[in-house]
Image (cartoon, rainbow, N blue to C red):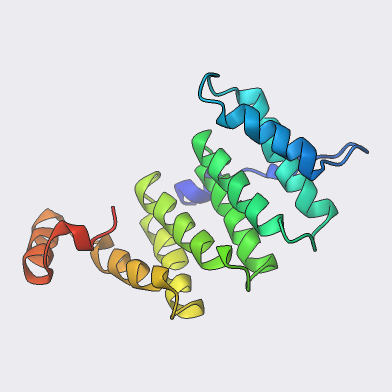
Length: 173
């Protein structure tokens, strides 16, 4: 198994299982707590907002905020070093809401995290290739192609690539 598969947990326990399902208001309140710069990141608040994001999209899957909530859940998970869980949430976003504006962003972000955060290059390649294949006209498809091109390069090949194709500004980090 890869590190991605090993570290990927069953985050279904994160889904709100109580009878009190989250509302936009409860989620907004938790987001304000998380975004308050005067307060240190509170793991309990982060875990609760993840639970509410996931619970909301389970309870009201047709709500237009669901793709955004899944994306935000992934972002908070990444901040908690739960990259595999974040990628699972982003993959769910794409499967459930393939026409949403967040879908190509979700695939790209998952590929980016897998490559940069946990060095899962093969899995990153799969997500990035999906951006290219499923959303070829989206601006992220260009960036995904560039990342795929340079992912397996050693330092010498990367320097040669940069010399031939311009500066390092053309390569996403």
